[in-house]
Image 1 (spheres, rainbow, N blue to C red):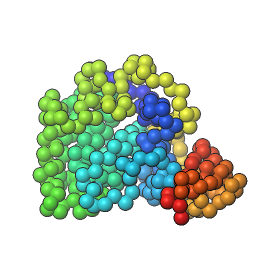
Image 2: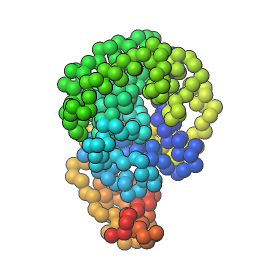
Image 3: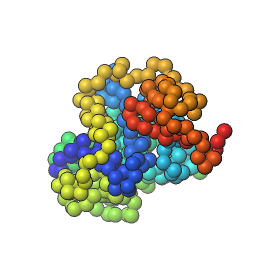
Length: 320
């Protein structure tokens, strides 16, 4: 069984920036805000997403993210929600999986986070099984495929909806959605894939299964490869803040962070564009910050802000 290097598993998300010659991509940015939204549970040994913070982080992200209109993760309309193929999911779920050792917590947090942006059944079930597979790989389970097959066979619609039905943003039982039929159809397709029958779906899951099967494969999004290949292909001279985040999430996994140190008791979220050049201000998500430069560019108001975590270019478009 392949042993995963958890730090590199996370860093490979951020490495996509370097491969695409960007300082940041939407994937690294989404992963960063997911990590910042994780909080240790006061009741169990594990970590969960604080959705008050996650929501505010997504709102803020709209002001500084790269220009990529495909990835709108808030205010998703009902007519899009149940068919939205959210490509950012892996960047959000890997931190959740790595930060937790208990699969019950992983499953709960993974499903909640998927349903926060999409109700697409194929996306949902594929990533549930990817999360289970990565968990088994981390545990170096000797019966990975057997455990995975048992997991999917035992997954019932009734049990799933009892646990997670209230996490959907919209009514999943509308007649035109055919939830029950689609759920069973996707489940059968995944079982077929586990038996070696490729139906041309579930690319990410198939790639991981190939790795488990000992094939020289890697996922198309590159977040996991065989350890020797990973060390050959990737040079980890990336932003030091990413390395700090990888170290931080491993501390979360080991329960070495006090929840009270992370919980925001009262949100202070001033309008970033209201501050002048050189002005200092406090923002609950950015901490102590300073405006370096402020100007109008291409009919948009921009504000270059220095924070403890780095420098952000915020843009309000259109100008108002």
